[in-house]
Amino acid sequence: MEVFFTSVNEKSNSEFVFQSSLKIIHILDVEISANPEVFKQVIKSRDNWVSLYLFCLFNTLFFFERCPTCLEPQNLTAVSEFLLLGLSDDPELEPILFGLFLSMYLVTLLGNLLIILAVSSDSHLHTPMYFFLSNLSLADIGFSTTTIPKMLVNIQTHSKSITYAGCLTQVSFFILFACLDDLLLAVMAYDRFVAICHPLNYSVIMNSCLCGLLVLMSFFGSLLDSQIHCLMVSQLTFCTNVKIHHFFCDAPQLFQLACSDISSHTILMYFMGAIFGGVPLSGILFSYTRIVSSILKVPSTGGKYKAFSTCSSHLLVVCLFYGTALGVYLSSAVSHSPRKGAVTSVMYALVVPMLNPFIYSLRNRDVKRALQRLLKIYSLEYYSATKKMKSCHLLIYGWNSRVLC
Image 1: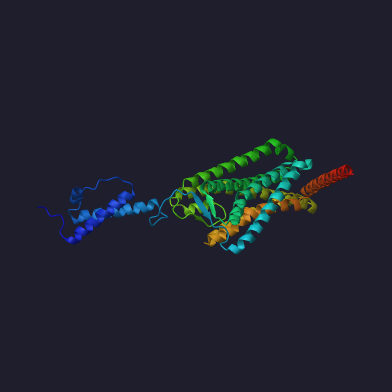
Image 2 (image 1 turned 180 degrees about the vertical axis):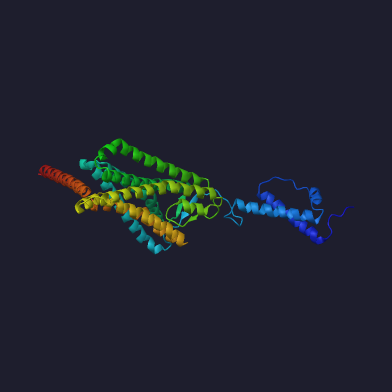
């Protein structure tokens, strides 16, 4: 009779390798029928045993390469909801945070709506610059509305959950309005470049058709960017950990929670960021380089001040927008605390949309005059309406007194 094993130790090692190989093959979803006779023929010698061991080791490494973020086996579940951990876990801070963010959100809505109403109601503001400004205010309303109401609801209901569909929707709209803000700021920089560097041809270049086309291109470009990010997030596979250390669903945070390979998604995300972030920023820098060179050629000091004052508000908004975004990126790169990154994200998610109406209204005489005229009209209408209501009450009271008499 042929002897297959020379020692008990080799037999135990062979059986261990056989069971390990079956488990690894099962993990890889490969169907195989374990025939002991075939296995005995394979491990007749020590060399074959070593080759089989190396084969098992290769399969093990291959399996972990398929899921690089999971060095330990985890359950891959169909995620139905995520947990937004928010800005703080302290229950005593929740009423303070609720009041603070509610007031900031209401100020953001009121300020941007007043800008839109002032531009639309005043014929003196029907120019390309204020047309882009009203669209920027509309984008700021959508930008803050995407994140803040959900956070307020979670604080009020003491719940941290958000559905999978709601998370995808939030990612899509957040990137849509953030990218739209970015592109509109670049369009406004081009408008200022034409107004200062080519003032005689301004009305010809910046006609209504071109202005509408620039806004539509900005919107569809932002829509493309948001849908690509939404598609990338929808293809991710998540493990059992569904806690997001943020107050809204952010695409980079979801990539960190993914249990699948995200190398291609990360490359695509940086590529889209370079296109929709780097290209508009380069256009803004180029426009202001030409603007500064043109202003320096103006001989009088008053002329330089007047030319610079027309673009000072926009330059301040650009510095605020890109400065806060760069600060969030640097803080997340230096500090590995996700909670600190969430706190700094409040700057560009809520503070910047809230400050934009104040910057344009306080530093622009035309906008201030339009707002004063708008408030005066509404106050007169309110006064006349209350006066009519009082007269109606007096008539009703007099008629009732006559009936009683």
